[in-house]
Length: 164
Image (cartoon, rainbow, N blue to C red; front, side, top):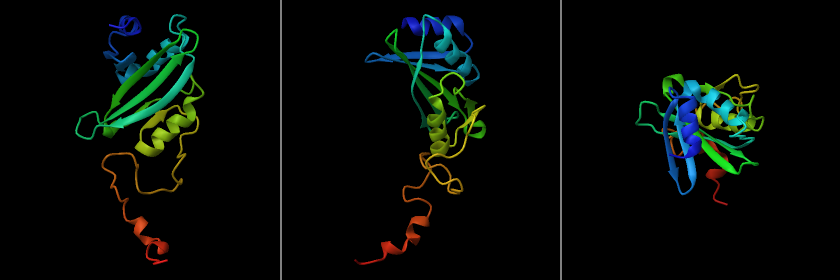
């Protein structure tokens, strides 16, 4: 097992689920209840020193009990290592702790995940839509159950019938 994954497993044995390494990329899956504590460890521990939030994303696994996966990728510029931290959340309780208090750069990225997938971030300072209109009623466009053609409103544009 990768040395970083071993340290996380030792520090958070109840929160550690699994670690995978593929082509030099380390991905560690943790329980969402410990996600913030593990990220805080990655940020504050001198051996980890993950001072840069690379990105926040999410994955929709519609056929699984814990349907959504929130993915944080953090990097230590000084130590030259990168870690992907994943946590699964069920659709009926689709919320994780925000990491904005650890990395300010997570603010807009978490808003994008909220806007596109509907995953909420507890303690986020400004959790609102960032890409879609504030009053967008159609749901979350990157969920796999969102219709490919939208939900009908695209057919109402007048220029679609214009032969010119």
